[in-house]
Image (cartoon, rainbow, N blue to C red):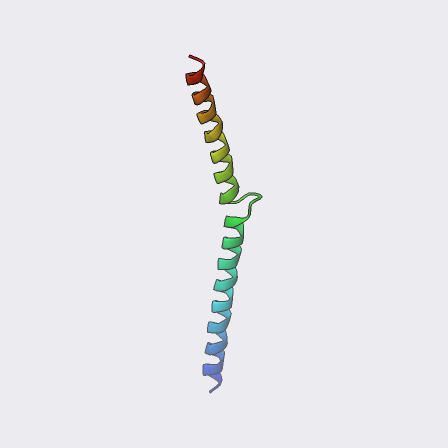
Length: 61
């Protein structure tokens, strides 16, 4: 009976550790200070600037 309890505790510990690792990954991935959202926003800003410059240069002709 003692071995089953030990195995159950080990499985619970592994599941808890996996959930914590997933939460940390999601937090880091979506953190606006340095995650993917910030990089996407920077890319969008640079693309918008390039499009605006292109439209202005066409209008100046």
